[in-house]
Length: 443
Image: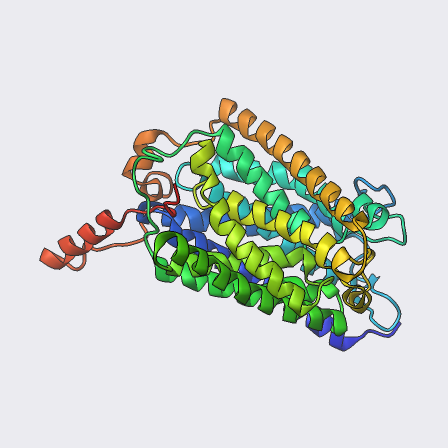
């Protein structure tokens, strides 16, 4: 059987790009937390790489991408059985199945990592590992089966039966993670002093570095989801760039009008909001639609991050405002902005939106898919969070949080100033203490 080496090379590169996004996310989140908990945030993200990889090899891939049941896969590929010699793809676009499995693994890794931002600064590391293992198994693997598994009409119920379009994971990744983040932010205790005390990001250059890595890796995330190096990948690549740039501008314009100034945190957050929103839509809209979607996502998410103050849930790093809201905006926008030309270029199963002469049918399908994933993830995450909190305890004690979760949990600190000595060391310590760490103040 002939292997398409070009497609194989592209998918290997895309897999590496998507893996690189998780360290990028760690830096993005790490710069936003307090200096005394930066290592804990990095650990929470890097630990997902280890835990989810093991689960994926053992049974995750099989549950997500095997069988004919529309709700869940089976154990036919337990331990990646049969994938070493397996072939993925249609005739002429075939490559080893292990490459496809590796690509999807990277999606599975970053999804629970996204949740970590909603409960930053206050959770036990062991409890987090427990949650990741359980949530990934019970929620992510089945949802990936629903959304990503195409099997000639015998795949997942969203992908192969409902025909809601999600090119790269607006539902399976962002709505999924955002809903779980909302559930944990509600179930677990708030950070000490929130929302009275200001908690600004302790390292904005780190935030921008993380956002840049995410932007770079996202081309593999979205364009790689075409699973071939062709016109579909080209469309997804361009739409990703256009929507992200537009959203960054949309966010800082809102800041300027609302607050009188645009911020570096705002432009980084706007870019991420654009990346989130274009993820489901990158294979079904054209570049003009990507501009519209990007500006809308940047503006809407800029306002949405303030919802936590209105409703009183402590979503530390705005996972709900950016990922849940951004994922919903992008998923629903498909029902409006999808075009027949884009759908044909990517081979998606769906209909054009009323932007291109369609009706509201596709919008209804998009809403059903988004609502189902949101409800399922929220309910299961709330149950898991409550159960873990009432048994082994999910959050550290308040004294450990105040003194520094890095030192209290990991016996390390992210910044060491003792070597400077004298007044310089004292000044440096004063700067860190003054900055603290805190998300945006949008109340």
